[in-house]
Image (tube, rainbow, N blue to C red; front, side):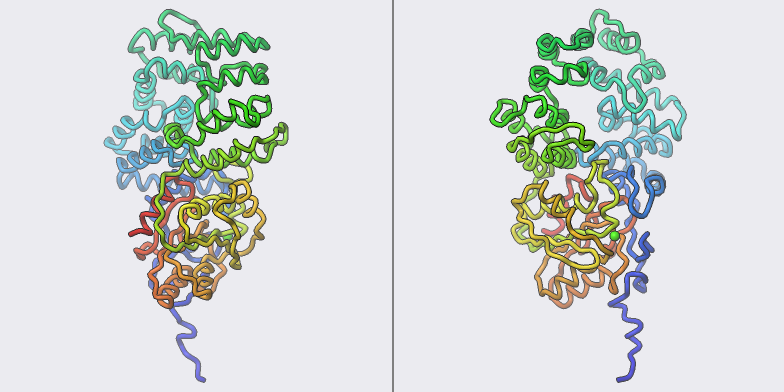
Length: 528
Ligand code: CA
C-alpha cells in the first residue's frame, strides 16, 4: 500500500506536543499545547484558588505576577466589572480565602479609573468585613500605593460606619494580625468619631482607657485579661459579656468549663476550628450535650451559609479531627464519631444546593505528579489531586448515573461509593500511583468501552503533554463515533491560564475547583 499524506497531516489527531492547526493554542508549562482561558476566567481562578503556594511548574511569585498582570488588564478593560466580581465572590463566601479578593481590591484602588475607585470605595465594607481583612488590605496596598486620601477615607468609613457593638467586638477579637493592629490603623487614619460610643472605642484601642459610653464588652475584656487559673470566674465573665476565645488568657483554655461557656455564643468558624481542642479538654465526648449541640449547629445549612463557612474549611477540619492528632503531632485526642459524621455532612451542605440532572457523568481526576504538588488553601496534605477527589464526590452524591475515574499516563476506575466518608476518599486518592499526564484518556477510554456519557468532568491543572491526541480531539471523536453530543467541563485546580477546553466549542465549560458555586454551575450547563 502506498503511503498516505494524511498519515503525516491528520488534523483529527495531533500529538499534544504540537498545536492543532488552525486553532488558537499556547504552550503550557509541561511541554504540551492547550488553549488559554481569557483574563476574566483567570480572574475567577485567582479569586477562588489564589496563588500563595507554588505549583509544580511555577513559583508562587511567578504565578502571582502573571495573575496580577491579568487582573490589571481586566481593570483597564472594565474596572467596575472587576469590583462587582470581587464583591459577588467575596460576599457569597465562594472562595476558601478572602485574601485574593483583598489583593484585587487593592489593585483596583491603584490601577482603576475614577469610576472604579468610587466602586471600590462603595464595595469596601462588603469585602473588608473583619479586622483581619482590614489589616491585610492595609498591608497589601503598601506595595503599590502610598497612604493617600483614598485610603484614609476608606479606613475612616470602615470604622465610623460600623455599629458600635460590632466594632467593639472587632476590636477585641482581632487585636493584631499581619503585623497590624487597630491602634496602628487608627493612628494613621485619625478618624473623627461620629458619636460618643465610637469615641470611647477609639480611646480604648489607642490609649487602653475605658471611658463612659464604652460598649460593655470592652469592660469584660479588661476584667478577664488578669485572670490566670480562676476558671469559674472566667466562665462567668465569658457568659456575662459574651466574650470570644481570643480575649481569654491561654492558661484558661485548658478547662472544659471555660470552653463550655465559650460554646454558648461561639461563632461557627471558631467552632469548626476548635473541635480538636474541645475534644482534648474533655468538653466534647460521646453522647455529651456539647457534642449534640455542635452536631446540630454544623449541619444547619442556613447557619453555615450565614457564617460563610467554606467547604475547604470543613474538609480541613474533618481531615485533622478524624486523624486524632495535630499536623505537627503536638496534641492528640479521641475523635468523636458523631462529630466526624457531622463534618462530613457539613462539607456537602456548604456548597450551593444542586438538583440532580439525571444525565450520565464521567468524573475524571488528574492524579499525575504535578497535581500532588501545591496545597489547596494552605491546608497541609490537601493537594489538588486529593482535593479534586473530594470535589468529584459532590457530583457523585447528587447524580445517580456516574462513574469516578482517575488518570495520569493511564486510566483507572476508582471504586468509591457515594456514601464513602470524605476522610476515606482523601486516603483513596492519596494512594493512587502517580504518573505522566494525558487529559485525553477519559474520552479515549469511554469510546473504547462504548460507555455512554453526556458529560465528562475533568479535574486538572491543564498541564497535559504526553498523549498522541489532544483532549478536545478525543472529545470530538467520541461525539462523532458514539453519536452523543457529549459536553466537557474542565475544573481548573491551579490558577494558571491554561485549559484543555476549546473556547470556541459551546459544549465545553471552564469552572474553578472549590468555588462553592461550581456544582450548581456544572448542573446548569449540563441541563441546557
Ligand atoms: Ca501533570
